[in-house]
Length: 117
Figure 1 (cartoon, one colour):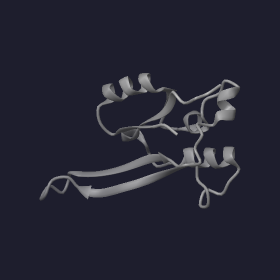
Figure 2 (cartoon, rainbow, N blue to C red):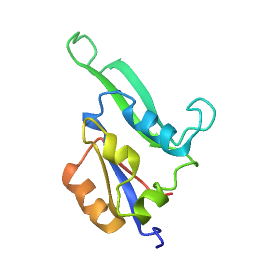
Figure 3 (tube, one colour):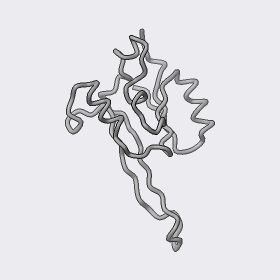
């Protein structure tokens, strides 16, 4: 089956930086995370949102697939979800048809991204 109309959605406001997606992907690909990762979690922050307000800070963790990501095609072929989706402890990664994920992203509104390999 071809998966060109499918993608991953990341609702990264819930990402806790646990790196479970990275480890699961490494195990699936059989690679060293440092050499050929399929997904990495980037850290943005902390940074102050409002000048002079010491309580207004933001700190984001953003899961980002790399060129190694093929949506776990072998898992999809046997009816399983991509390994990052299956193992995400925060349940902030979704897999599905791009048009459905685009609607879902619009509902979420912010701190969301869609990845299509």
